[in-house]
Every structure is written in C-alpha cells, then in structure tokens.
Length: 355
Picture 1: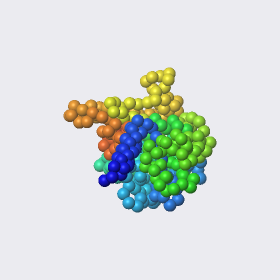
Picture 2 (picture 1 turned 90 degrees about the vertical axis):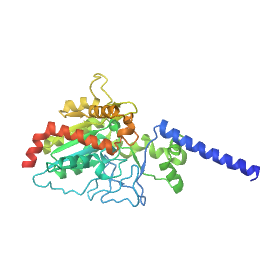
Picture 3 (picture 1 turned 60 degrees about the horizontal axis):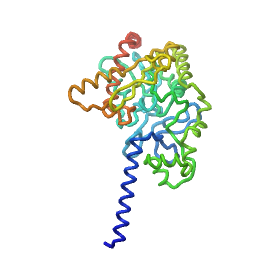
Picture 4 (picture 1 turned 180 degrees about the horizontal axis):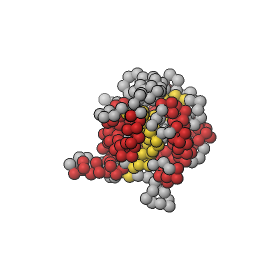
C-alpha cells in the first residue's frame, strides 16, 4: 500500500476514533437536551395538539413499525395512552386509579408495556381486588400540563384515586422534550441531530443548521410557556385539588427520587425548611398528601449490597440516566406504591369495590 494511502487511512481512523471518544465524553459528561421528532411521515408516537397547555399528546392506536428501542413507544391504545385498552365507563364493582406523570410514568426506556409502573401496580392488585391502574403519563410534561391532561381527558374515566408521580424537573415551566423540526435540511443532518449527542450539542452551541431556535428554551417558550406561564407546579396542584373536590376522587403525590452512582436522594428541598421538599410545602398548603419512596429504595439497595449485588443505584434501578426506571425499578416502585395505597386508601378501595 502506498505511503500516502496509509497516511490517509491512519488519519481517517484517527478522526473516527476521536469522534467516537468525543461522543462518549459528551454522553457521560454533559447534559444535552433530549429530542423526539413530531414530523409528518416520521414514525413517532407523539403528535401536536391545539391545546396550548399540552402542546402535544400521544397518538391514538399508534403502532411502531419495526423494533422499538430506547425512548420509542411501541404502541398506544385507542384513547392515546401507553396502556391496555380501557373503557370510559368504570366496570361495576371496580376501583380506578390514574397514574399521572411524565416520562417516568409512561415508561421511557422500558420496551414492554407490562414492565411499566402502572401495569406492574395493576397486576399486584389483581391477586385480590378488581383494581384498574390507568397510565396517563406523557413524556416531558410539567405539573400544569399533567393537571390539564386530567381535566380535559382523564375525568372521563371516573377515577377513585389520582396519584401524581412528581419528578424534580417538573418545576420547569414548559413542556419540553419534544421538538418539531420546521426547517428544510438533509435527512442525514436531522438523523445525526437525533442520534448523536456530540452533534446535537455542537449544533445548539454554535447554532448550526438553525437547530438552536427550535430546541433551546427561548424558542420552545413560544409553543406553550405563554399558556403555562410561571409557577406551573403551584398552578397544577391547585387545579388538581379543585378537580378532586369537584369530582370526589382521592388525590396524592408520590415524590420520585434521583438515583446517583453512590446514593438515592430526594430534592429539591425548601430553602427555609431543609427537611421539606418544595413540592411537599406547596402540596401541604393545599391539603394534598405527599409520599416519598426513596427510603424504600435505599433499604432495598442496602439489602442487595449485603448480598454482594452491584453497588450503583443509578445502574441498578434506572435505564442509566438516574431518573427513568428500568423494569426492576418500576417493579419496586409498584410494590412501594401498592403499600402506601393499601395503608392510606385501603378503606376507599374497599368502598369502591363494594359499590
């Protein structure tokens, strides 16, 4: 092989290895905005909606063609939720629980629907009671949007108990992980933006190909921040409380923890009360019970450590990002949520089942 050809080949290999190393570094060291495309003709479970508070919803009766991996949702039911088929009218003698939330509830990173928190929770009740647990999670929603979803679509299912799974990023006053690409670009460029966090970070940092205005918060505010405005958590919880009083269902919040490499934590905490989560203070003023499940996860992890299991909660309970549960994390969350439901709402479940 000629010397010049060898040099070019070595240069090409060096460039490829450098790009791979840079991609790995960005994925591990930087927080790059996640994206899902809402684009006509592109396979995606989400679609835009005219409701400015929601911005987008899940498509009805969506089926992903080919293998669904990562955050891709394989299918939705005819009502537009990642759930089995449901009827609006509650079956006689049954109890209905709505699990409300964002990508943690919808199960981003969980490929099989039966491994989501809602399905595992429903299956736990199936041993002895007629309890339905409806999944009303939408990826990227903030609290105000979650409350809006319940108001415009969830009440039709006649819930007895609504559980809001609250995640620390719900304080962001807009819905945010879904982007619609409007500019005309080569398909390869759009695909790189979705697949490569290195390319995505560079595109946003240096405003390449016009991506920045479509992804950064300053642009996304145009989609629904005007509808949500500020203090979305307070707004959302006030609306949920109002709906619970009007409709007669029980309402509670489950505070979702953050899983780090060395520990499991809650947060953020109130600046004036270091033992109280901010959401606990807001909910407490409204008379909404809030439950933490971090301690149950800690005890479970300590048990596994004593048995010589891996010592990394982030990898053990989540898909690797410290937030979204893997099937093991979802199964344990369902167990912990079942316990708190039985302890605090068991009598209500019994009344619903009898009536």
